[in-house]
Length: 125
Image (cartoon, rainbow, N blue to C red; front, side, top):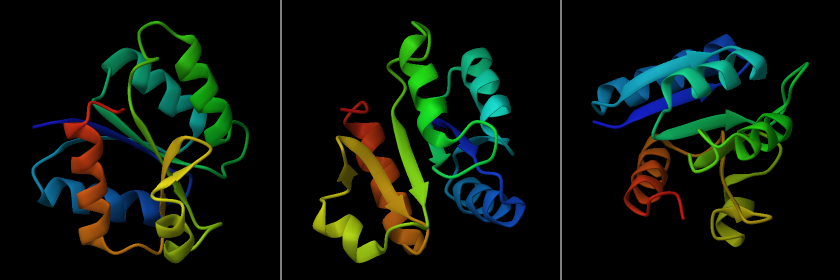
């Protein structure tokens, strides 16, 4: 099964996403901040990264830029997790903002799993 890295500074959110993905049979890595997430991504080369947008120190945008600059991680697909926009806004943007995959933290479990499977089957494109 695919290996997914979840990066979120909110411990409850991190645990929730981890439980959801483990119940679906995914291998899961977790990080509570962007710096640790970047290191885990480089060291473990996950198949997909769920990346919180707003985090202290190194936010999701900076982590994403660092991933793109690294030859080992530049092709790992990223789905941004955010509470800034609603599920309806995500749907209106067809699941992307500025060309990046995104999912609202208010989305339900089925939509999260569907989006993950879509991204994995498309090879992140």
